[in-house]
Picture 1 (cartoon, one colour):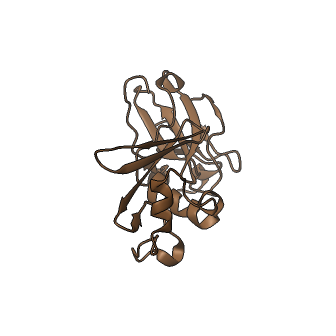
Picture 2 (cartoon, rainbow, N blue to C red):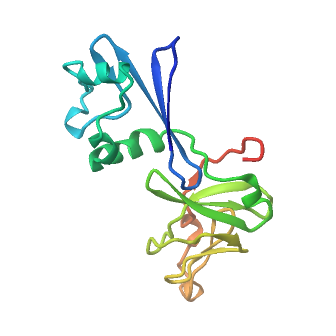
Picture 3 (spheres, rainbow, N blue to C red):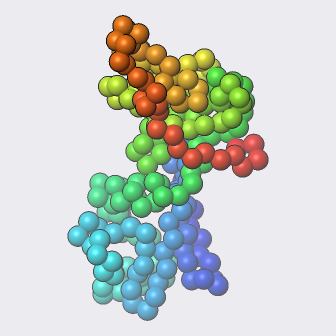
Length: 195
């Protein structure tokens, strides 16, 4: 669902897109300045901050109540730029607090093309990690549930709920093996009320 609103004071048009996946929300602000369009997205050839609307046609169309060109909604280049410049730079809503209420609760999601696992630790702290095993880059969690450890199904490497390395098959056979540096990559996560 797309919602379009124009703020009369700032001149900004806010396009909101509910992706329907993990309740993520994209807010793209577009503002017209004279004949130029300033937006959060650009074609790869225009990454040097040139105006996206050199002849003013797009800005005029938006001012008249039209949306961005349809190709901007389907072009892979635009999608990748949105992932990099919008989703990977902003806080994104990924789930409800009830999903990680008890120790061991977890759920997975994707933010800007990055697989994420959100877990509730033994200390009841909510943490987020890149959902990729440090051994062979497979997920350490699938869907949602409750587990005492996050375990990759490929070679059974396991991680504690705080993201630290727990064990790997036959790792105790090598006296020089040190898994302490093989923790999951942590990500910032915050609660807002029950969310």
